[in-house]
Length: 405
Image (cartoon, rainbow, N blue to C red; front, side, top):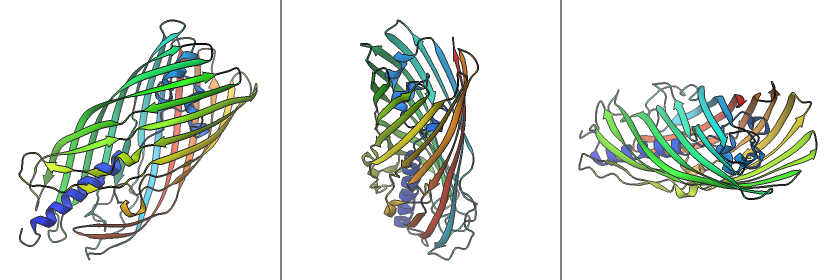
């Protein structure tokens, strides 16, 4: 223990906890249906094209005439390849591809209680992250595995006030699970720590929809969801194992969307979305069973904006085709980027379509490629400094089945 002072141990633990939990929590998943992916999710707070509007704007449920269910699945393949060095001469490779393939499901159901009142339910995953490096990579003292999963249960209601105006609101009950690991000290070969934690939280969402014959305008808001993750820190050397806790807040977001029918066969869609990441400015990680104080870590994330444009061509009664483009800002400032989530701004290019099997059944599909700006990293903890760059991209493939009852 004398070769690696306790003060430095505390710094390592605080950094590991903050970089893992904070950046995992900072990865929002907009992939909540396949019907919007082909438009790069432009206009989703106004499109109200199926029951997935429960997530994007609950007021849109008022436009659905019958009971409807939606089941969607999304294959998300992020790639993150590091090239660079670590200031301490620990040896090791570049970590391989820290990305992988993740499957994200979503489920929605809408039922008209009366002609003017609709009830809905959504089950989805609004936040998620997984990065996993080779065990002996050069940056192992900052990150090995980082995985975060959320499950959101979202009951909602919509009220059609008039032929033009509808309002909607819902509650969000969310569970979060996180797993983080990294090597501890270059002075103790083979030292490893793993942190696991979970919690339940709740929030709300609401929206309004203004619809005319050719144009729909939607405004939607999702609240923050606060968690206190509780779990275990397990270490095989250097650090004591014990119960730990960390406060994490998922950000609020607001979207303004427009859908306009320029002709009976062509729709244009646009969207601007704000996400309030500046609420996440610090993280305090603490042992709950050991009298060891841990310093809070400042994150200094910033609010981010997403802009998207799309078009849909209704080729015939059975087939529709979609295309879209989006620019998605990262909330992570350059000075606070870490190996847990080496995020940067990205540009979306998306295509997709819909095949209407009959009056009650439809299949939607979409594909998007995200071009991610090269991400520089100069990240320091008690073990050393990781310096270099990341070459990133993301592929998304989604399929959806819609059934009317």
